[in-house]
Image (cartoon, rainbow over all chains, first blue to last red; front, side, top):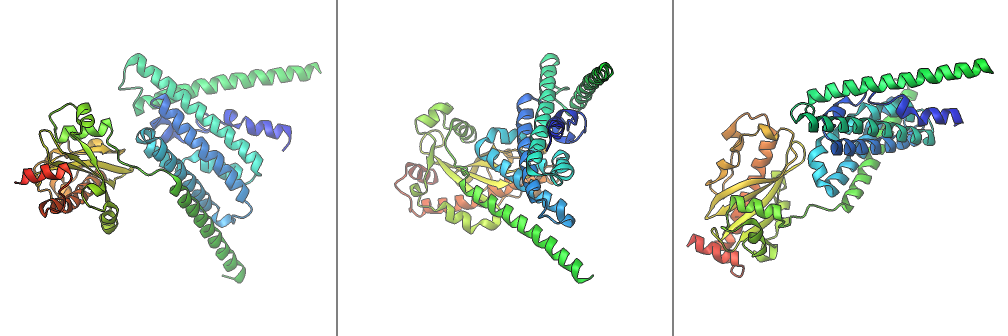
Length: 201
Length: 221
């Protein structure tokens, strides 16, 4: 893995943010970003499953036949999700009461299966680990930002809208728009600077 | 289908079976090391019990002054794990028995039981007094459609015969929370069955030493 590949993979969570750019995993993102604690907790659980599944799938990629790679990935992801659920229900029962139903749904989260299919199944363990960490952090950041914004708006305007699904959709749309606008501004200015440097050279 | 493709198909199935077996084995081993749910008489449980089976004193005092106590198997000569094992088909488990040796409803006993609902275990507390259900409430649940349950789902249990099965499904019909309702029903029914055994031990004089049993005998007399 050379330096530019490493940089590309490590920044994947930002440049290809699973929530704001790829628009994946919308169901738990909207449902459990009603407050910051739920958002961070679900983000951490998802990131753990994502990192572990990326590493395991990448390590087993040559062993798993093409014909059954999807069922095999699902078995691995479901086992990791079951493990997370066992840990949460045993040690964090209060958290389990609030996000328990959505932990099981991590199994069918498109971010995890998507990264397994698009990256971990085709790359070595280290790049897959970096991709998992990057994407996991990207998801945690996105869901936390959304949770914080919704909680703040709920405190400001009272409960009943921003803590509900409809408010979640609107806040997600607004935060997504701001993220993409800022990100494209940064990209444009970086491209201009690179062009100037090239011309100067 | 030629030999090579048959071979590939077998290989694919074998790999899938192997991955599944390894995953199941790892989870089974992990499960052995995770702490199991153990019922305790904490402040929340005391408050719930005092709500369905009033002791006549405030929640904190009811717990600290022994108005509500957590009974051990040895207190009433029962083997809860053997009972649960023999009633596995009922898909519900008895978790604990609490007693009220003194207070307004001295002699009452409360059974904590659980059954799997839609999103995990539903844990309920059922209070028994004088061969009738004195009250019931939920201790723990994480059900998505809990709000769809009829508001009087626990109230209807009060006064029912302590030792017969209840039919909440038949009583309420369609609720929108069928799995949660059947979990409550199973939990209540397993508790009723256990209560029958417990009661039999009292009426036949098998339990004499424990104060709850003495108070319970007085209720029946």
